[in-house]
Length: 286
Ligand SMILES: C[S@@+](CC[C@H](N)C(=O)[O-])C[C@H]1O[C@@H](n2cnc3c(N)ncnc32)[C@H](O)[C@@H]1O
Image 1 (tube, protein in one colour):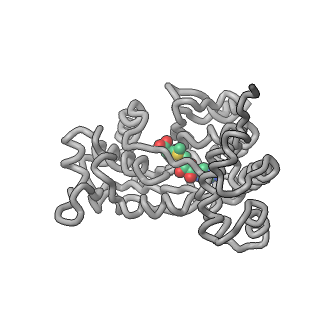
Image 2: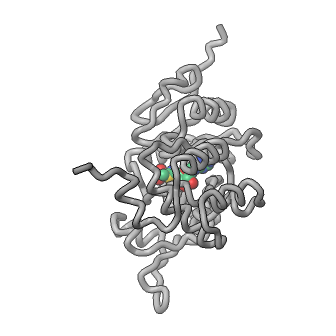
């Protein structure tokens, strides 16, 4: 008896042929475009996400789709990128960061303006959590704080901008936060909650590809959140991004990273201050 191979077990259930060469082409395209490094274990994921795009465009094979993409306009590139990003997020994810953020903001209360950049904002839970922490620090819903929330994925940004979440997304939040920061839906909106408009007013949402040169933004930022996105990039790409963060961060600013991300390979730029929170390497002028 011959053991079933990936090819044997998947072929009958697949609507479209998806060769190793097709997969390699997709890998190269998303790496060049978004910096995302896909491992070979992601082949099934790529198939299922992109076959929707083949269907939407009425195409019959991945080869056709790749040709269409290469010839096609900006719109399909955007859909291709949106399909291949992973957007997992949650309110107050990696909770230990938020008291640190609150303290940092609290210590800067005398500044006329505090700027925060959330650089992989996904569906908005992270920038809204930042806004809630800021409101707590200032004990005001109109603090002098601007939050820039960016992501490469235009679909998630739309969701983020709406600020409406199913109640199951809020399950883990304490009642006090629910009461202070959300408006529960009624009637047809039952089962959903909207973030208070004051939180939304603190945030500007914009598309930004971390891989691109010449980001159209101006610092200095008191805080940069870049959590759970660097894991999709290889080390040289991470370093290039960190090199662009450095001049945008205030001298006493903080860079928040995800739980499995470490920037030891950029020790010339950033130094670890506490668990997954970095600061700029101080230039001693020597
Ligand atoms: C796993 S989510 C993390 C969300 C949030 N930061 C958190 O920690 O909960 C990663 C996000 O990074 C975004 N992303 C991936 N590649 C990107 C790039 N090149 N530029 C900007 N954002 C990117 C994805 O669209 C996705 O929303």
